[in-house]
Amino acid sequence: MSGLPPALELVQDPTAKSEAYYSRSRAPLIDDAVIAALKGRLAASGGGTVRICLHEGPDAAFHEMAVVHKKGGVFKQHKHLAKDESYHMIDGILRIEIFDEPGRLVETFRLGGAGTGLPFWVRIRPGVWHATIPETDFAVFHEARPGPFKGGDSIFRDEA
Image (cartoon, one colour):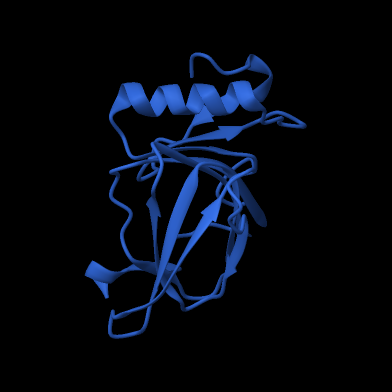
């Protein structure tokens, strides 16, 4: 992907639902220039999400990603059946909505990057319906969860 350091050794994931790249680097580094390139990619592509996976592939035991959501993207209600996931904000503001099993909104909170005065980290337990909504032009966060990614662990509300 143009604008990103070649040292990241990125390989696009052709099976991903959103634009995603795996890093083959021994020690992938994410800095301000990488984040700026990801934001630029989203602005140019018209997509809602782009991510760099710091793990080497879907079979990795632990998944870490630098994720950028664009304001106005569609981020459906979903839950993970057996895996926790955490969001650690890097830049911008991300609203997270929590829903009960029938689909009623039961909690809303906002995460923010440095200097926003907002909480910056959350861990969401398995089985919790949630949705993410960027409130700034871009919401940039570090996402971590157990692997491997085999499909079937995430259920979207319209599939339930």
